[in-house]
Length: 552
Image (tube, rainbow, N blue to C red; front, side, top):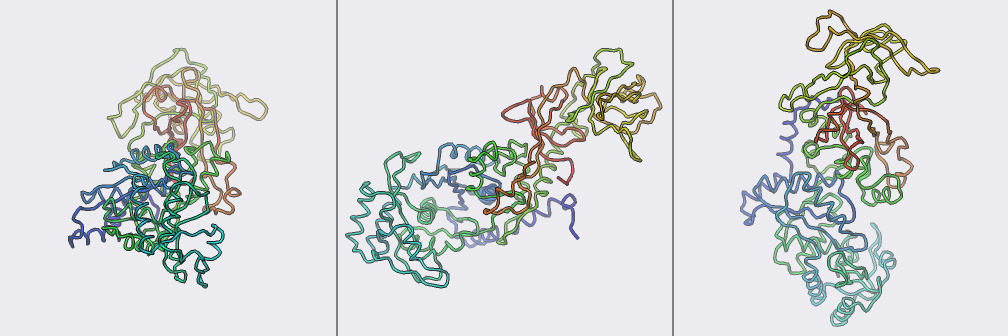
């Protein structure tokens, strides 16, 4: 039997988190005295796109375990591929990490260590453990072999140390074209681990770097770079996702053979898979570049920027990451868990207000008082949020779905000759229905002056309570309601464009009470509707964050 997420205590997830294998490993290392510099972690994104919620799991883990043990975390940009990287992404990543609630002890870049990395590669060449290979990229792939067949040695594998050093210096000096030469480690072309079959350590890229300009035209590969950077920064636990497990022998080989003074341990954990999304920056970039979404911060995107614009809170993301835990088992998490975490946080913190998404005009035929100021709390369970003024007049809007010409049994809303209470207002009765063809366009109603909320002496028993706004004072807004970006829970790289949901966003012309637009807060519960957020680009546009209950 599946237990609804709403009834699973949060503390149960936190207990699981405290017992995960990474935290247990860190506890053991602390007890054994193996960490003289304490717990030092790093979050090393490549600045070639915006961070997504999968990165949030790594951010929470790296920053979290360091903070729990009085340690520190480096934010290090892996900027070794200038053709795909941009300062825009550097800034967005810093903004996202800050927004999630974390502070780095040091901000570094792989490019800070370009001189050291070049020297370590030179040392490998001097020691006969690396060589300059002049095969093309395609030829290297062809000679690498398969899982069942060994690779072939490069014909350039036996170049002399002097020749290799000369070629590497000339590569550095810019004498050769892109792809003309690479530096490869000399390991074992028959290794069962294909990553150990003379991997490329350096390649030529005549591309200006966003930080170093044109100073370099040779750039180190990630597998060579990040282990040395970990060592130079004194990282105590190099935490990465499971796809790097097969790369760990190469991580260790580089550290041991490049004569780096310190050897951090690499520990792998499962990355986050989330339903109805893709987590590849390459695929997300295609959605942006080909115009399927409005940008990296489109509220339908799983990017942190997109989630923020949609109204997801940093506390909800941290809670979500704590609940899914840290394991070595790959899985795909239900989107409803993220929705639950968002709902759980906003339930406590978001102000309440009234918004009508599909308006139906209501005229109070016996109203003669002009505009009356009513009052309502911003949050019935949180008095500290105060109260707001609700203008009330003889012309209102209610939700179309709150009226039925031919209501079903046990209908709890408005119908011909039936009564409802207007939230914080009066009881009204529908006396006449105005139609245009098959469409109901206006309701003419009576209101009962003695039925004012909190002062009701009417003795009337309405069907239920509905929300409303005063037509003249309400603010016209655009409402963006979102469905899943993909139609299927597990879109694949081969078919993800075909799997896009063509109805992932619906735009409505609605109205909200004026206090919502006037207030500086951005997150609101539209009563009986859901949670909404003012759009960061347009304050008269509201993005739906999540429904009031599970079930999209």
